[in-house]
Length: 173
Image (cartoon, rainbow, N blue to C red; front, side, top):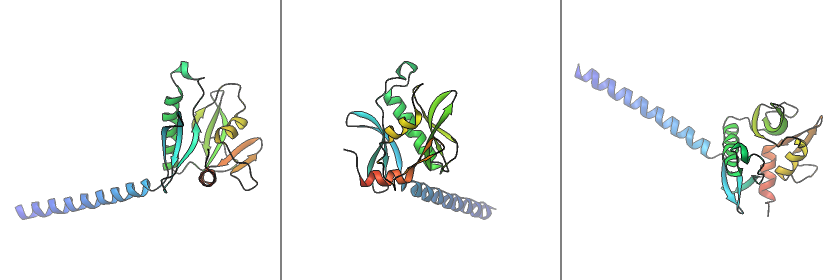
């Protein structure tokens, strides 16, 4: 009886160990991807993408004070939006950035295909702003014929992987 109990404990322990090993392996695999974080960059809260090569690529610089009275100062927005970038990246949804409207407010959002609608909110823009122009300015897109920017039916679609690739090759000064 004790021998059977011992065999069961060893089997369960080995199974749990293998499950833990698989979990650790998948966690390690995730960590080799891009990580998004909020840090002060040149003295300003900035959403950074840390690439697998350990390069820090500035994605968004948070300078607007418009949402301060709502409790969302630049630092808070940076933290929240960096977390959203990470969430959408981890779930395979960070293919394109585009613009749209949610709750009658202009927003920047993610979509998985060019020409698609908003599938996930990244952040809200000030009322009355031109979301297309704002997205172009925020992302500091280097306009080239082969660049990551595509305009379809009045909306901008930024291929985020291409954007990161170009940003690494042409760092912002």
